Image (cartoon, rainbow, N blue to C red):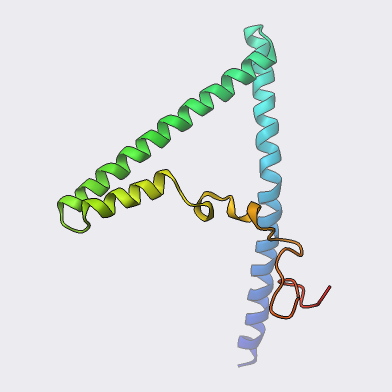
Length: 139
């Protein structure tokens, strides 16, 4: 019985350690990615004998083109899926059109601009008694 009570705190400590390590690893990853891309551009420019800015521009343009292709393919899949749902009688054509319009022109909340418009974060929202979320005190 006593061993069961020791296992629970040990598991909690292990999960906490894993969460902290995972957070630290995730925060260090973007820096590694951007430096590896810039290093790639530098090496490629040297091998081709052209300016790094030209290579960087070409990489950015290619990335934008690929993103546009993926977005167009996803939009077509969505249109096909909605058409199949209309054909099966699961939704009406009006509902499909409304959903497609919402997807193509999302409201601020879904587009990610919501948090910018309203200052969430440090001291951004006051609770019922004037305390900031997570702080538990008035300021």
